[in-house]
Length: 514
Image (cartoon, rainbow, N blue to C red; front, side, top):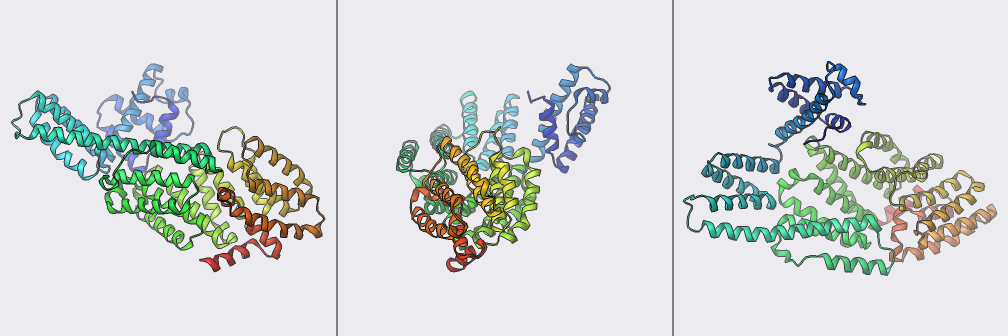
């Protein structure tokens, strides 16, 4: 039975659009019984409240008994889902196919097996045209069941045809499952370990990928399986810090979706996901033309399809678009201009707070803090970094907290809090060692700030001058790329050496290399 908890029911009702609420009320009014009016009354009460006080709600419903109230909530939850299924079944091909399979089972149950077969034959074509292999296998298995139990007068090759279709399709579905498993495993590896940090990590990932990759012939893969395969490769190369290969496979992923336009309607999230990795990889590689073109594609797709997006698609489009807009300001050195989009980003973060992973929110705070550093407002930057550093109650990947502490050193140096820096360096060093996350760049930054704390002001520029070659040498190390992705500390050090703003340094680099 559907969930009857009040908080889940309230969350479901508050997630409905105006059209969905209107459809539910029309749907409920057709029940033509007292319980139907109670549905609507309870629905109206929950729609207007943010907190569930069951005793208060029961009184508004006429003081109904606790058991009856629990049943009413359960039935309301069930009927809201039924209403949503009705309104969305015509828009989602998989829902339509499942609905037709259900109808075929009803016809079969009434002894109308020939009608059931005709319906299955019709819906089989829809499933084939939309690459719905799992549903297609279910249809064929149902056809086989009918053929083995009844004399259908089918053509003589019907049995062989169904058997052949079933074998081929089961092999294809088996491969699809293995590829989707590999895709999930690679994502799990990234969540668990992030990017590789040494040759040992790299060898481990390579062996893991090779072990779990099923035998396949790329030329014989279905479009969906080719997409899954490209997604696996994107994650694989992303973990290995091979952003060029990641970019190439993300581009193939995007192009495959574009070959079947119905896929864009069916799974807009996958399409936006592919562009997101094109943007991420091209940003890390500083391939500005590719980055800007990909951002235009994402903005255009979002604008054209937003009205049809469900909540998940709207949230993903916000994350991908706003992240890339912020990155665009970073690569061009337009930090002050970038501050103009911060209020709209924060508004969206607040709107989607209950549906966003905490790590995603903190990544936005980190990027906003970097925007303020670049714009010359370290005080505001520090306030956002504190939100990341002070979070202790929710487990998350500690890398963002580690780099937030390093960025906080820069913020407090810019604020002139030299006396506080000594404590901050010690606490940052302790945190990174405790998390086993102290890489060469992080060690170098901490060592630099230790020297900076104890140096006279007239020697600071000399320290910056000696620190720059050290950073440039570290940047050549493949396994240290992650640190420079998080912190563009080289541009900050150059700005101190030249006595100009960080915006000027980055803007000059952008003009030279774009």
